[in-house]
Length: 110
Image (cartoon, rainbow, N blue to C red; front, side, top):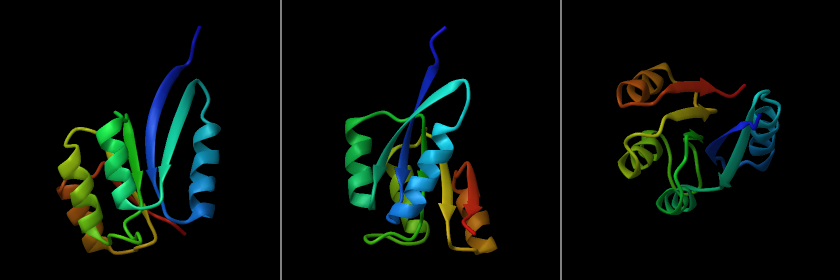
């Protein structure tokens, strides 16, 4: 039986964090995860125009965007794909706003 493939866009400017998330996705059993990384919002938006993704994992603090502006730009580009925020910004108010605006979840890196 062939494994179902899940395509994930990983928006992360820190190489170590991106590697860690990719390793965790590679360890998922019963599902092959194909991850495509983008180091900034501009590249992520370009990839979203070219490809369809099953999920997006996004940091909020990037070289060319920060805070909820990052999430808003992703959501404006694609209103249907689930977006999980994985960020170092530990702000409960921002987390609540993101989820109210449609984020699937808001996770803080520790």
